[in-house]
Image (cartoon, rainbow, N blue to C red; front, side):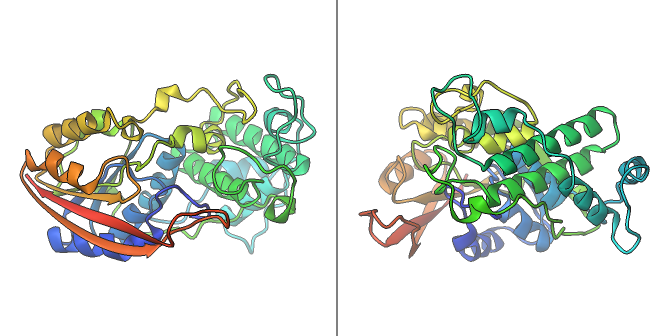
Length: 355
């Protein structure tokens, strides 16, 4: 993924995949219950596992569709025929490349993103403009969003093609967002990558003739657990109080293609419908119990951190009621700002429960 994501497993992917390989043979079914950016799901697909990917967030759903559901390059048959009347379709480019070229040349528009998230806007619920994007990039986002929405409504895009283009738009927007890490707030001045022009790029797709083996779901892990049968369930829950729905609200708006009320200084969308109990110390235990009790699975592998709401002792006590628990610890360098007083090394845990 092109963006820093809270709890991303990019740095520890070898540890996680190595442990999954020990516990579940290749070609088994693994549930990635909180798939996030899809790093683990994608690697599992590369290694011939059958993957069930689930997450609460809509942007994560589109990422997982792109990572797991392409067996061949998209041909955009209806869209190429549609745009050929008014846009040059270059024969030396693939259909996908022509579509990305078309979107990059869509006429900018002063719309929702320009008004709510650029310094030239006049937001409805803030006394001052927000500075998430340059005015030029916000107008481009509005133009491209409108085109994708219209193409989808007119059935010119398949569901698979729509997910791909929204994935590409999210990745491109994140590359030029005026933020320090998450979308909890914007930086006061436009600088660095925020001054570069929004530019969609073709995703390097993983193409395999195995798409029927993979399932992509969206919803609460606690609710979807009872719908899943698998050989191993990998769980990478939120560790801290920071809600993903609030910290990545702009990516969620891009993924949904809507125009929600933008509230307060940060312009948060109404996000309580995606509130995670795993970010609440008083509710996290019940959520784990619900998942483990209801899922059709006997092997669980959980990633957790020393920074988490629960101590590793709490975790051991919680899971011991369900079966045998084994815990492995390893360290890696944490991401931190220059002003951070946190230690450089972070201890993470892989917790194996055999039910």
